[in-house]
Image (tube, rainbow over all chains, first blue to last red; front, top):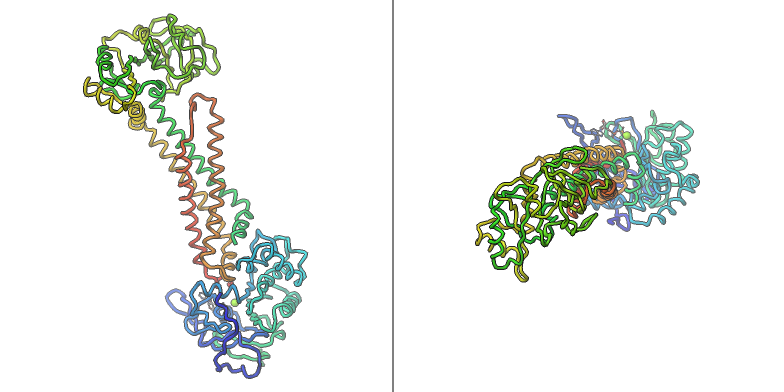
Length: 254
Length: 378
Ligand SMILES: Nc1ncnc2c1ncn2[C@@H]1O[C@H](COP(=O)(O)OP(=O)(O)O)[C@@H](O)[C@H]1O
Ligand SMILES: [Mg+2]
């Protein structure tokens, strides 16, 4: 409901924005996140400034525990930063009210969860159609739209099956369809290949490149799977809650 | 999303049926026990209901119910008749007696003596025989419940001879009556003959039954009778209520039924609460994903409310239906004769169901609402 019609201009502090003409999708400034661990407070993110662009597939990579998941959770509006601000397509999302933020996510963001979190008692088409149904579209219409996308993902013939009748790879495709069905402008995906062997991981990534990347859509993939780094348009390296590299290639020594 | 909520619920057949069972069981227990309770205590007023013509019951001031009465001198009848507004007044005798059947069994029965001339005091209808048969010598009319208890179901007792306190009695009719609370057999006979059956004490007039002149209320006339005669006079409704109150005050029935009803409620909360929170816990990741994708807490609340509402509506309907089937299947048993479900009782059990679901739904919702959407990435 609060999605702005066009991205607002972002601040000019982004290091690499001059190198590309792509629009800035996310502009994160001074992101700090603390977690309470018993008595003590742990700082997981130490003041992160970064931009994510539309039309690109951005990888967030780093060791396990470096804060990747925390960072993208903050960037897609499901985790409040302790300090800092996040503008997504020009909207300062943590200045929105709770309800506005939820609706902003529904309009603008597609999620691919590692454990696909499909609803077991509705079929693949209905699962893929959830964002449309949540937006108020009639069930049948939403399912038809979702079916078209499932076709594109080569599992159109599985549309009427329940999740537990599908293989893991097929379930992941349903989850991908659910993330894209409402044509969000930002897609986030946490460790899509973690549970897959090398060749299936590769296939999923190729598929994501094919269906998720679009001119006016930003796509963020969190991974620590170095087998797929070559698929990235841009790579952010996180080390202990600090961005140590932001470029089109992996830095040397990784 | 409500469609999805319902599918989530019905998709887990085991838990869905568990929830339905819990609600249906609670509803059955509560509805059935309250129904039996209400019908049972209303039996305390069966003596009043079985004498439908009487608008006012006049008695000794110490008498409390149709079965707990102290006899008056026979002059009381004329005193009552002389009160203005009394259209008619007839004697009514109620007493206990021992009866010996042909087979030699001994039973305690209630004797009711009704007015010789008008037969006022008899139940409205007979199942067998005619009221006029009372004019024949030694005739008694037995109530249908008593017949069942004394002679067994379907027995043909017309013409059956009894020995009543050493007097001969012949059954020549069966009354269609509401059983007494104690389910003792009742023998109706003419007042003059009842005096013979009941061993002679000086005063044997238990009640005077009164009809009120047109245009006067029973309450007014009862007040006049009390004022003028010093006797106790109660309207039909007052006296029926006194009979019910007597049962409530003098038996452990309210406590016993109360405990069962509370148990039904507690069992409902336990079964439904456990199953519902298991269901929610199984689906907590899905709820988390829905929250991340963009469902407001309000929509989540509505989803859970629809799930609870659906379980409640179906479970409740099943419970009320089971109660009706239960009562219907026992309707041939004279203990259940005339049993009905007062309309307030389904409302009470509906209230209980709503309360059960509100408690358990709220507990379940708390965990859903407190789930961080960010947890879906963990
Ligand atoms: N909800 C939380 N409570 C406490 N600590 C957390 C929480 N989420 C993440 N952390 C901690 O923050 C650090 C970074 O976590 P995470 O962002 O998941 O890293 P990554 O995704 O790179 O593996 C870890 O040390 C983790 O234990
Ligand atoms: Mg992670």
